[in-house]
Image 1 (cartoon, chains in turn purple, brown):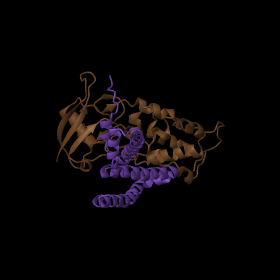
Image 2 (image 1 turned 60 degrees about the vertical axis):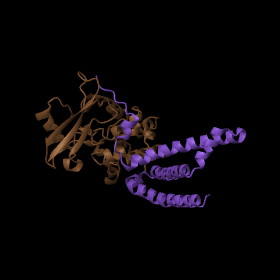
Image 3 (image 1 turned 30 degrees about the horizontal axis):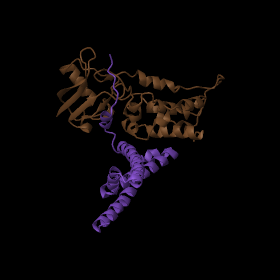
Image 4 (image 1 turned 90 degrees about the vertical axis):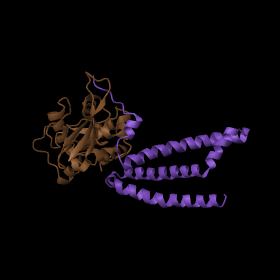
Length: 129
Length: 233
């Protein structure tokens, strides 16, 4: 009998798809991350203001930590730029031939903006903000 | 040079679970991975099972996963993949034995997109001529050899085997953009299904895996656009 091969998460991750597959995986993770962040943020804000519950205040402390903010800026910025790249490729399929160059362009825009964000945040943390 | 191979093994009559066997063979840098498999089968373990036919990258029988990516064993040289190799069957299709998978689900998807020329109902009195520009429009997708490397490298196909997959879309593209074909609307309707082109998330594994260097993702993108705009630009 043939061996049924459902491709599980780890089996899929082991496929060496390279940069474009990584971009797709990051797009999914950042999208999911933003949904969880916004949902929890709304719920936590509600419970903080209405009841002052400790766990909600705890969640808000996590949100306000610089590390988490670096993650969320990464998620938003990456998701937006990668989404733009995919939209452009969908609208002009002939550009799909140049997807490698477009991925480089995406990182070329991403790196300075994200570096600036890190710089400003470190500056504020150092200033005690 | 010595090449170490780790090969996926599964014998449905004796094994409950698949396992990996290790072999070390003497090889030249210009040997193909298929040559190494042939050597193992001839001199080390005659029970090793894999498909091969032309052995020159035309028949598309020997698509397998070599060091983590889908390749044709007859087109990959040892010097390009190194001296430590892991060889597995392509993903997402049932394994019949060792490196042989059941290609039936793949061909069912292929057949579902009307992968043949549909001419006009009236019998033409002479050859149907086509300009070089019109022929050029679908030239890339005529090169498909149906090896399955693209479809089985696609995470959307792994997630749901009902997705027609890039190979079927490439073969639909070949006829959709043929100026003489009369079944364009039917094909676009088939691919507008929930398991049609929109399962493609522009991951590009298919384009990387294609041994014929077909711009698979571009072909899928062009079919998506044809469906969305109802125009064949």
